[in-house]
Length: 136
Ligand SMILES: C[S@@+](CC[C@H](N)C(=O)[O-])C[C@H]1O[C@@H](n2cnc3c(N)ncnc32)[C@H](O)[C@@H]1O
Ligand SMILES: [Zn+2]
Image (cartoon, rainbow, N blue to C red):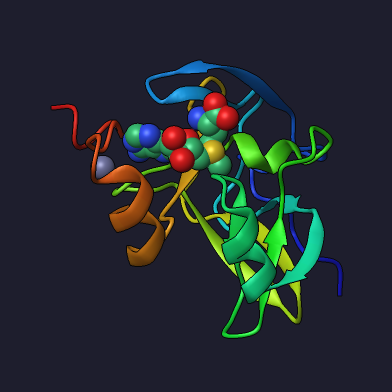
């Protein structure tokens, strides 16, 4: 049976990179419905030991063995910032990383997901979290 499309769900997810409170960020350029797939986080699949050697803010750790280095400019998902009250979440399937909306997101709103404790403690906490919740 064909899935009924919610009113907030658009055919095509439209996204825009622009300045946010934490450097560049990724914004909805059209409404996105709760549960909708937004974008895949792509890059080179590398072993965690190699990720430790490289360092950098675009490393996405998948599990105890593998990390995706998403530093490439074609990886638009790399512009999504961390939030303590996010509107997206990450789902990993094997070694692939999918970002989905967990709320209805209106056009113009910044996309965010929770980066997780390790990344937060190492790279966000020292300078302070600049997500919408923490700035208030
Ligand atoms: C994957 S990048 C996100 C895009 C980044 N803002 C940019 O301009 O390329 C992650 C980096 O963005 C910054 N960042 C992301 N979320 C943040 C937040 N909530 N508070 C402060 N800095 C944040 C940190 O420098 C972090 O290491
Ligand atoms: Zn925060």
